Amino acid sequence: MKREDVILFSGGAVGAESYFGACAEKYGIDEVNFSFEGHEIERSRGLRILTHEELKQGDVSLNYVSNLMHRQYPDTPLFRKILQTIWYQINSSQEVFVIGKILDDKTVKGGTGWGAEFTKICNKALYVFDQEQNRWFKWDGLNWINTTNVKITSAHICGTGTRILKDNGKKAIEELFANSFAD
Image 1: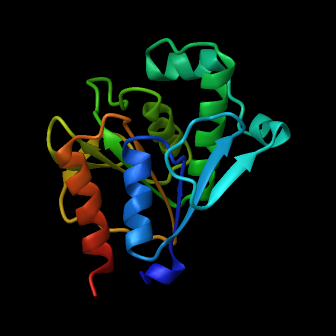
Image 2 (image 1 turned 180 degrees about the vertical axis):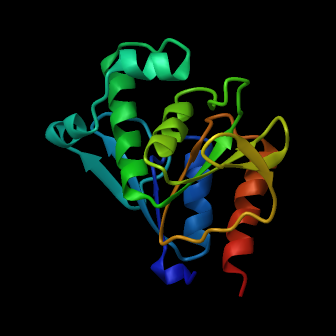
């Protein structure tokens, strides 16, 4: 994959998203960060503020998400808009990379979990770096499979994850870009 053909879709939030963005910029990869008016983000490169009408396109039932994820999410306008921006990140991507924690029920912890679950529903390539297990996993349609030497192989990727990015998560993102775009 040539770096000039790749676009990173993300949200620009503190933590994994901003780190994915910084690595994309370092490697000369275009970046689109979906957000909404009044949302606090860390990266503004490629910022795409979604309108009210655009956000509605990504609307999803919180009941559905809560049942699918086996946990309760807050029914607030802010959280709803975050889920709606995740819809844009995943829909724009062919391959999704998440930094987080895989739970026993095969979902990913936190709001990031919806992005991973939506990726599964869309049947797109999904990789999660589990910071506690210190390794990458690939979703095979039924289970998480331990994998190594993870590389970007699609032109449109999503990089997202936890706001609490640990050193091993940073290293995983750095190695992903280095393995994919070594000169």
